Image (tube, rainbow, N blue to C red; front, top):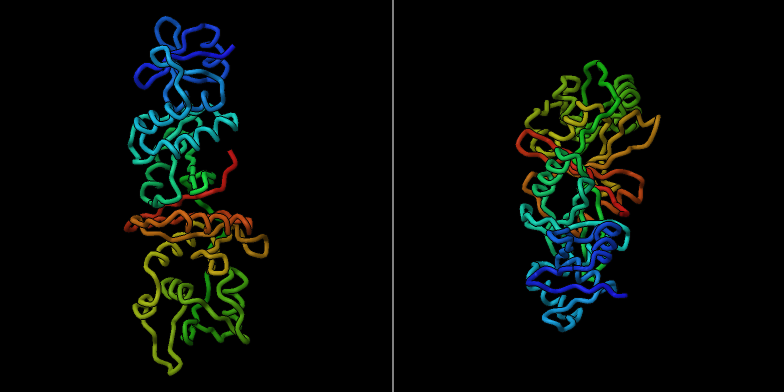
Length: 339
């Protein structure tokens, strides 16, 4: 026998105890009220009517799915993407409820204390400040933060978004002071012994003739560590300031921080990232992480984020956004998720 519900403003009331038990106790729909009644919100009612699990009546007349959808869309901003995500998660076996507070500016679904799903349309902007704020809040509550991105065809991409403390196992070594020469946008060390030590111990640069060629960011780091002095091809000393002017301040801050945290850091260009990072020596394994360096005010279209995460997963690496706010660096990991 079909379950009947009565539409009362923006709630649907289920009265029969047997129906209340089936929907509330077994399937975790709605909230119980005085008199052992069950109160469904419009989102739940649309889903149950869509699934032909209930009939909804208003003043004795049966309410159609079209009428209920229009009512829900009128009462609930961004109903389409909310319902698309809610239905998908429910069909996957997750009992989720709409979060009432509007602290993010975007709708959210919640599964008890397990996870919170923030829902975006493909047309929305990705904002790293909001992401950092959300991950901090969920981390404090020991919950997972999920993102659901609903594209124009109604398909959903899910991400698990995590505030992360990264740590590598590499230790910095003491190196003998050496000199290098600025040739185009590389610094070349010709001393064979210094080149071998830098490359073998901490994977600096890449062998070049009998020496080593360094990226500018590696060269600047070694200059700051007082291991390297750089000259132009005419023998004139290149100042640290001149080297620094050619490098992104944000990227250099992150590079230094990752080195301090025990990583070997190399360019991530071939993987579409700023850096790739090894937690152990490259002779012992591949780079596990790709880092994108972002200013704290960064925003972008979701398609850019999707391409970055998809590429990282295709090469079995984790994608991490290094968010720089003045001198503070926070790490936020994005992972593809199958709920």
